[in-house]
Image (cartoon, rainbow, N blue to C red):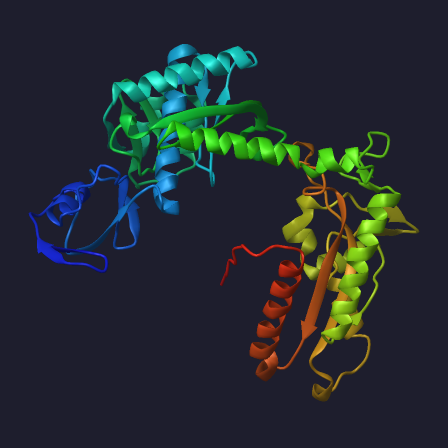
Length: 421
């Protein structure tokens, strides 16, 4: 079969050749290749190819390569936990942008001393350079396999998978974990690993489920890179807005009021006033009409808007008043639409741009609250635009330009934009 490296040469190789061997045949045999992208899908280097393919090597300098690297690191950490604490049960362990975590069910709380032992054992597993191999099960085989190992959380996951589809697991030494992959070729492909901290997490994010223990960690090709990352974390802690806000007497969150509800002190209010005044001036300059909406409305409005059906778990409970139910607003959208519908409009009126600094209330779980970043009451920059189809392209372009202007004004010059269908 013929394979080609993306943007490079092609070559004939034997049928069922692995991705790693195909890259070698194409002259790409670097030790720093972690996985491959074949026809757009990320796969293990040991995965056999089928048919002609476009192949691309993935290294640590790519987001996909780093995800493979750190996902394999979670398995190394999980293996270390199982070797030290055999009764700990495995749940899930994903890679994050620059770190990873794994959630465990264990009959006592892990301690900082445990963390040191786990990290030392993880380093030992790396030094063993164990091959990481993929295996397939039928659904029933997978249930039987993990049930025999006492991994009840894995069994629950498998039972929710579609019938008839193969289920994959990855093995390194005596350790086997349910996983779609892909993974690094060996445990020795990880250069340096560092465990960071412990936290609690509900199984499947549901507070009605058991509380698990989450271990966070990170990994890099070299210890120097780990040290640089740790130094960056320390700098982030030093600049943490919760710490700075308290030291400068800007804000506070007090138990007597409730979690996730922020008090703005005089100095903080002064800073906020400056930002809000800038916001108002720029929106008016850019052709927006400013509006205000109440903090609550009849529950029926939120049923009509779809919030009750699709957003109920993030809304506060409704309040009963004078025979009706009222809802604290989680968003401003229905109000702006009601303003637009308050009288007949002409197509000549369009576009109409409504902007509001709208205070909203959302029921965030206690475990995810975080300073000013995740709260239960906040004021957001909200706007809704009403336009004709022939005006849409210009309005979208205008909104993007305005967004970039505001971000850059506040010093945000590097950011990502995600587009969804």
